[in-house]
Image (tube, rainbow, N blue to C red; front, side, top):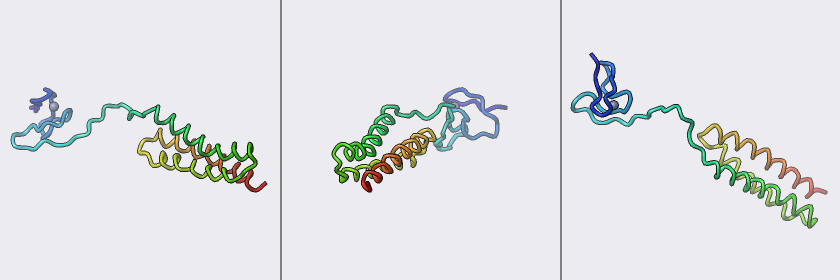
Length: 122
Ligand SMILES: [Zn+2]
């Protein structure tokens, strides 16, 4: 015997108390349960936000380098350190793809900070 869901008409196995498809209780008197249905889709990533994070990272970590080279004034190189903020923010993201962007941005900002140091010391 199968337990047919009143909500979505999915045929559940007899031992199921909740619908495997939509989570509706199959037994009278049971409270609805929070279920996470795996749809097979990748989590949606805001591509615009990722692009902006790249611009912010590149701007912050490389503006110090550019200003240092143009003005021979190394105080602007301190800006490069702010460039480290965004990659670390992304590295904490729960989505793997965002973590990869975080690693890429970390490398970009690390090179920028490295160059800033080079300019500062020469
Ligand atoms: Zn159902």
